[in-house]
Length: 308
Image (cartoon, rainbow, N blue to C red; front, side, top):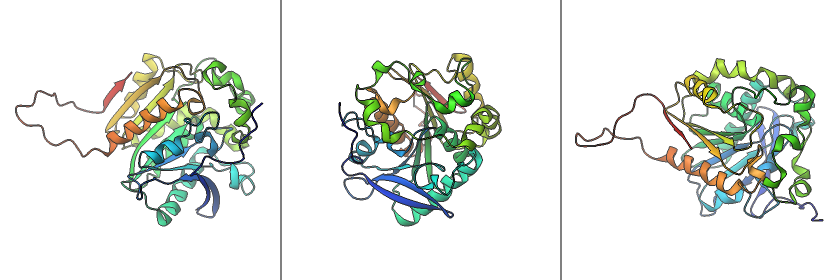
């Protein structure tokens, strides 16, 4: 049996951020060729840790090392109640407080490290809720966009709830064949207990999303795994999702084939991460100028939606 790795991938180091007095641990991988083109801030889901984005089952799974090779700095943060803050915050924080804490941590990071063109939030599952709330109410001045996977706005009818949701378990991962065979060995250090305040806020998410969605004013991309079982992603649910993000200048909904809920730990991780960084590349493009009179391209009103 393959032993668990001793530490993060080569080039990835551990740092600590001061989030207005709350210590947050994080993994940092700097852009390889000097100043970053932009900074990707990765926010993990419930029962995980920052190491979720530095998958060890195969060398091509890590978002941190891939982003650095493509000229981005990647910062994966341990959310409040995880990592370094588990001691000071044994019960964690609720969603609203987590958004404020993340924003404070990003202020500290920005004061110490260059961010390039700005910050791009890339979040998974419960972390997606935190990222969306951050974008709605605590958006950094240089926020470029938001990518969310493993999170929607309407739970599936048979989604786990209560204590079962907090425990997670392999059932929520989707078919185990979607993950390298050593995943559950080397991912041991990535898994962590779900703080009690976080558990309590799981059921509140649909109502919170309705309250804040219209305040998100940056491009947003949602990715649903082919074998996602937590969230509704049928046409009706997606139409409602789009209607609520009315202020987002661009809204994209994508589906990741060959993937389960924990996309970044599966075989599809590299494909998914490249799609995310492709969306970031789109967000970095200059604003579309007024089209010439002879242009054949139509000018659309409102958010642009794309779906695979």
